[in-house]
Length: 172
Image 1 (tube, helix red, strand yellow):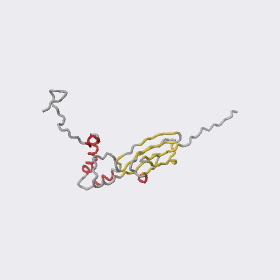
Image 2 (cartoon, helix red, strand yellow):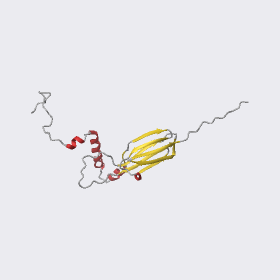
Image 3 (cartoon, rainbow, N blue to C red):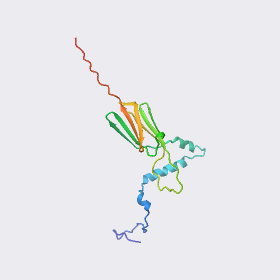
Image 4 (spheres, one colour):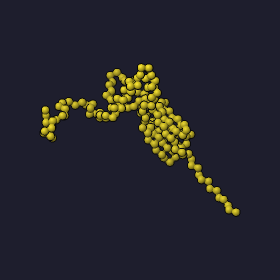
Protein backbone atom coordinates (compact mmCIF):
# COMPACT_ATOMS: atom_id res chain seq x y z
CA UNK A 1 0.00 0.00 0.00
CA UNK A 2 1.23 3.47 -0.85
CA UNK A 3 1.98 5.99 1.85
CA UNK A 4 0.20 9.34 1.97
CA UNK A 5 2.59 12.11 0.79
CA UNK A 6 1.87 14.47 3.71
CA UNK A 7 1.54 11.83 6.41
CA UNK A 8 4.14 9.11 5.88
CA UNK A 9 2.57 6.71 8.42
CA UNK A 10 -1.00 7.02 7.06
CA UNK A 11 -2.19 4.88 4.13
CA UNK A 12 -3.12 6.70 0.92
CA UNK A 13 -6.79 6.03 0.09
CA UNK A 14 -6.85 8.19 -3.03
CA UNK A 15 -7.71 6.34 -6.24
CA UNK A 16 -4.69 4.91 -8.01
CA UNK A 17 -6.00 5.63 -11.52
CA UNK A 18 -5.43 8.93 -13.34
CA UNK A 19 -8.08 8.55 -16.07
CA UNK A 20 -10.25 11.67 -16.08
CA UNK A 21 -13.91 11.74 -16.89
CA UNK A 22 -14.50 14.92 -18.88
CA UNK A 23 -18.18 15.10 -17.89
CA UNK A 24 -17.27 14.87 -14.19
CA UNK A 25 -15.37 18.12 -14.45
CA UNK A 26 -18.50 19.84 -15.84
CA UNK A 27 -21.05 18.37 -13.45
CA UNK A 28 -21.02 19.19 -9.75
CA UNK A 29 -22.40 16.51 -7.47
CA UNK A 30 -25.22 17.72 -5.25
CA UNK A 31 -26.33 15.00 -2.83
CA UNK A 32 -29.58 16.80 -1.90
CA UNK A 33 -30.55 17.19 -5.56
CA UNK A 34 -29.71 13.53 -6.18
CA UNK A 35 -31.93 12.48 -3.24
CA UNK A 36 -34.81 14.67 -4.50
CA UNK A 37 -34.42 13.20 -7.97
CA UNK A 38 -34.45 9.66 -6.57
CA UNK A 39 -37.54 10.39 -4.47
CA UNK A 40 -39.35 11.84 -7.51
CA UNK A 41 -38.52 8.74 -9.57
CA UNK A 42 -39.55 6.29 -6.86
CA UNK A 43 -42.82 7.99 -5.88
CA UNK A 44 -44.98 6.25 -8.53
CA UNK A 45 -43.68 2.84 -7.42
CA UNK A 46 -44.29 3.60 -3.75
CA UNK A 47 -47.83 4.81 -4.47
CA UNK A 48 -48.66 1.78 -6.60
CA UNK A 49 -51.22 -0.39 -4.88
CA UNK A 50 -53.05 -3.60 -5.73
CA UNK A 51 -56.34 -1.81 -6.43
CA UNK A 52 -54.85 0.05 -9.42
CA UNK A 53 -55.38 3.61 -8.11
CA UNK A 54 -51.75 4.72 -8.50
CA UNK A 55 -52.54 6.59 -11.73
CA UNK A 56 -55.43 8.39 -10.02
CA UNK A 57 -53.22 9.50 -7.13
CA UNK A 58 -50.48 10.62 -9.55
CA UNK A 59 -53.00 12.67 -11.54
CA UNK A 60 -54.08 14.50 -8.36
CA UNK A 61 -50.51 15.65 -7.79
CA UNK A 62 -50.65 18.41 -10.38
CA UNK A 63 -48.21 21.02 -9.09
CA UNK A 64 -44.68 19.77 -9.70
CA UNK A 65 -42.51 22.90 -9.74
CA UNK A 66 -42.62 26.56 -8.95
CA UNK A 67 -41.08 29.29 -11.12
CA UNK A 68 -38.80 31.88 -9.52
CA UNK A 69 -40.27 35.37 -9.23
CA UNK A 70 -39.10 38.90 -8.47
CA UNK A 71 -41.63 41.34 -7.00
CA UNK A 72 -40.92 45.05 -7.14
CA UNK A 73 -42.75 48.32 -6.70
CA UNK A 74 -42.51 51.53 -8.64
CA UNK A 75 -44.41 54.77 -8.24
CA UNK A 76 -47.68 53.74 -9.86
CA UNK A 77 -47.56 49.95 -9.98
CA UNK A 78 -46.31 46.63 -8.65
CA UNK A 79 -44.32 44.34 -10.95
CA UNK A 80 -44.05 40.57 -10.78
CA UNK A 81 -41.45 38.95 -13.03
CA UNK A 82 -41.59 35.17 -13.33
CA UNK A 83 -38.94 33.00 -15.01
CA UNK A 84 -40.77 30.74 -17.43
CA UNK A 85 -38.24 29.43 -19.96
CA UNK A 86 -39.69 27.19 -22.66
CA UNK A 87 -43.26 28.02 -21.59
CA UNK A 88 -45.46 29.52 -24.29
CA UNK A 89 -47.68 32.45 -23.42
CA UNK A 90 -50.68 30.31 -24.40
CA UNK A 91 -49.75 27.86 -21.60
CA UNK A 92 -49.86 30.59 -18.92
CA UNK A 93 -53.04 31.50 -17.05
CA UNK A 94 -53.49 34.54 -14.79
CA UNK A 95 -56.58 34.84 -12.58
CA UNK A 96 -57.56 37.29 -9.82
CA UNK A 97 -60.06 35.97 -7.30
CA UNK A 98 -60.74 37.28 -3.78
CA UNK A 99 -57.80 39.69 -4.07
CA UNK A 100 -55.38 36.82 -4.86
CA UNK A 101 -53.47 36.73 -8.16
CA UNK A 102 -52.82 33.15 -9.32
CA UNK A 103 -50.23 32.34 -11.98
CA UNK A 104 -50.47 28.83 -13.37
CA UNK A 105 -49.46 26.83 -16.42
CA UNK A 106 -47.36 23.93 -17.57
CA UNK A 107 -43.92 23.34 -19.04
CA UNK A 108 -43.89 20.20 -21.16
CA UNK A 109 -40.76 18.10 -21.57
CA UNK A 110 -39.87 17.61 -25.20
CA UNK A 111 -39.45 14.04 -26.38
CA UNK A 112 -35.90 12.75 -26.50
CA UNK A 113 -34.42 12.60 -29.98
CA UNK A 114 -32.69 9.54 -31.36
CA UNK A 115 -28.98 9.59 -30.62
CA UNK A 116 -29.27 12.20 -27.84
CA UNK A 117 -28.19 11.04 -24.40
CA UNK A 118 -28.87 13.18 -21.37
CA UNK A 119 -26.25 13.01 -18.64
CA UNK A 120 -28.34 15.02 -16.20
CA UNK A 121 -31.77 16.67 -16.26
CA UNK A 122 -32.17 19.31 -13.54
CA UNK A 123 -34.86 21.54 -15.00
CA UNK A 124 -38.35 20.97 -13.67
CA UNK A 125 -41.26 20.09 -15.92
CA UNK A 126 -44.99 19.80 -15.46
CA UNK A 127 -47.69 22.00 -13.97
CA UNK A 128 -46.89 25.02 -11.82
CA UNK A 129 -48.87 27.39 -9.60
CA UNK A 130 -47.90 30.58 -7.75
CA UNK A 131 -50.38 32.72 -5.80
CA UNK A 132 -49.91 36.28 -4.52
CA UNK A 133 -52.16 38.29 -2.22
CA UNK A 134 -52.59 41.74 -3.72
CA UNK A 135 -51.80 44.79 -1.57
CA UNK A 136 -54.70 46.97 -0.50
CA UNK A 137 -53.79 49.74 -2.94
CA UNK A 138 -53.57 47.39 -5.96
CA UNK A 139 -56.30 47.67 -8.58
CA UNK A 140 -57.30 44.14 -9.68
CA UNK A 141 -59.10 45.60 -12.70
CA UNK A 142 -55.89 47.16 -14.04
CA UNK A 143 -53.53 44.22 -14.46
CA UNK A 144 -51.54 43.62 -17.64
CA UNK A 145 -48.99 40.97 -18.58
CA UNK A 146 -46.49 40.31 -21.32
CA UNK A 147 -44.01 37.55 -22.08
CA UNK A 148 -40.56 38.23 -23.51
CA UNK A 149 -37.42 36.06 -23.58
CA UNK A 150 -38.87 33.50 -21.16
CA UNK A 151 -39.83 36.10 -18.54
CA UNK A 152 -43.47 36.87 -17.75
CA UNK A 153 -43.92 40.45 -16.50
CA UNK A 154 -47.18 41.20 -14.69
CA UNK A 155 -47.95 44.88 -14.04
CA UNK A 156 -50.50 45.62 -11.32
CA UNK A 157 -51.54 49.27 -11.30
CA UNK A 158 -52.10 51.03 -7.98
CA UNK A 159 -55.43 52.68 -7.25
CA UNK A 160 -55.49 56.44 -7.43
CA UNK A 161 -55.12 57.73 -3.91
CA UNK A 162 -58.19 59.38 -2.54
CA UNK A 163 -57.15 62.90 -1.70
CA UNK A 164 -58.31 64.03 1.69
CA UNK A 165 -61.25 66.30 1.36
CA UNK A 166 -60.75 69.56 3.18
CA UNK A 167 -63.95 71.24 4.17
CA UNK A 168 -63.91 74.52 6.02
CA UNK A 169 -66.52 74.70 8.71
CA UNK A 170 -67.67 78.04 10.05
CA UNK A 171 -68.22 78.43 13.73
CA UNK A 172 -71.36 80.35 14.77
